[in-house]
Amino acid sequence: MRLKEHGKVVLVLQKNLQGGSSQPAAARSSRYLVMAGTPEKILEHLLEFMRLDATLYDPVDTLLGDFLLTYTVFMPTSQLCRALLHHFRAEPLDGSEQEKATYSLHKRRKILRLVSQWVLLYGRLLQGDRSTTALLQNLADLVSQDPRLGAMVQEQERRRPRAMENGDGSISPQPKSRSSVSWLSSQDEAALSSSCALRAQDKVPYEIYRADHSCLVTVLPVNASVRDVLQSLAPRLGWDGEHLLVKVNSSGDKVGLQLDAVGVFTSLGLNERLFAVSVEELGGLTPHPEQLGPHVGSSDTLDLISSKDLASHLTDYDWNLFKSIHQVEMIHYIVGPQKFHEVTTANLERMMRRFNELQYWVATELCLCPELGRRAQLLRKFIKLAAHLKEQKNLNSFFAVMFGVSNTAVSRLAKTWERLPHKIRKLHAALERMLDPSWNHRVYRLAVAKLSPPIIPFVPLLLKDMTFIHEGNRTLAENLINFEKMHMMAKTVRVLQRCRGQAHAPLSPLRNRSPHRPEDARAVRISTCSEQSLSVRSPVSTWAYLQHLKAIDSQKELLRLSRDLES
Image (cartoon, rainbow, N blue to C red; front, side):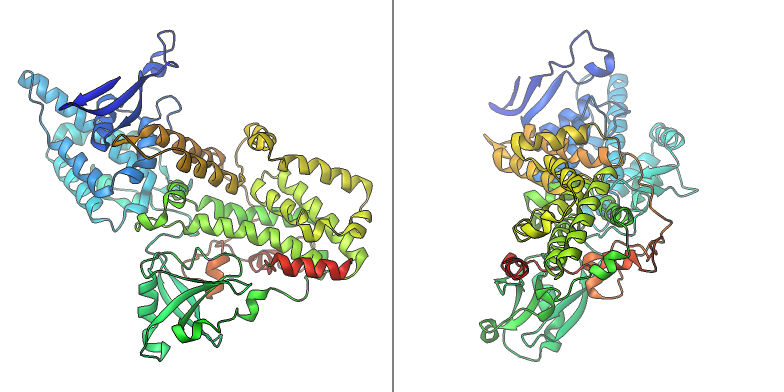
């Protein structure tokens, strides 16, 4: 069905074949699916047909959730705020006075419902946005003038649970006492309770190196621009000429950053560093020695920790990272974080960096273990670690450890593999089947579908799915928003919600520590906001060890070490 205005198509709907007359009323609530349209008409259709009890995670009618999860891709927040306020104030032109009043009241109730779900999803991400603050204040004022709407808000207050879920899957307590309409303008209520989560405006210490490898530290917001970084350092750089901010990896490859680039610190890859240099210094710039990775392995430490304890601590660590990822970060990460200054992708980037850190750590430890017998024991431990991670449903770290064991520098160590007991080699072969990429990772997807939450999924595959959806489908088609693409993106994002449907029970009670104020700049890159906890089996501080994993990320160097071990 194509709806036209002034001779132009403004909305494209498709019959929902899954909601036939034989289905219950709830399943028939949305008879048409939105396929395309202008942003205004999609919102208008949503308000026309949404139920007063609509929720973000309705398994049947997903239009509200799909719209709120993806609207920033095609509609600036300021435009959404203007449209919602316009709809709230608009009066119908046709019908009797009674019919007009009834229609207006019903529509305003829907708008309040939509806004409440919006605040519930985005929480404190909406803080600092002037258009959102103005909308919430205007709605609160208008509601206070209408006793019928005020009564509806009070009724919702009574029905709402005493805790609220945020977009990152965490739970926020509600204030004990509030006025009947204050929830509309109180964004603190939906605050991210996890102190682990980073927001765009949170301030963190930036480590910036000079050409002589000296280090300068400046404290700036997570989404600070390159221009902001250079301006804050200008008094200490001690040179009147122009400076560049350059990203350097362990191989010495240099990438100059644009002045308007944001979030550059939290998006650094493994062993990458930021350097502030003059144009003349750029040519002779070399990596900092710490970027090259360790020279000695930590097998002595690993000997003191059982593979099961190691897996449990890794899962505790990873869950803190995973639960801090807001759902919309996945969309913004793929579509382009530079378009969304109010939302950071730092939490997702920390998770991805941790994945790379873990897989290179496994390969590094094996390539830095000089004795054949101990190396075989270490390889055995890592394979058992992968098995425990799979059992604990930490599939992200499971894949990271398995990728580390499968690294070319490790797989070529034939003498080491020969030392493994038959039982361990059989276990490794069984675990490898989960890594099979054929049929779009069918083995993995079927296995995950059978698991119950809490689950830490294979995050790189989720991002791969999002990338295929984004690059394989146009956002605009014939000057209309391709909302079918938004449906697909939202469906992928909901995997996070499903995996976090139940809280993870940690290995031991851990005190939270905010990563916004880490003890040093390195901590902000890897901190997961929990204090040290001692391994049950040893005096080794397993948690502290896992927070400071050191790895060589140069494949060339790993292969050189491997050949030295077994040429």
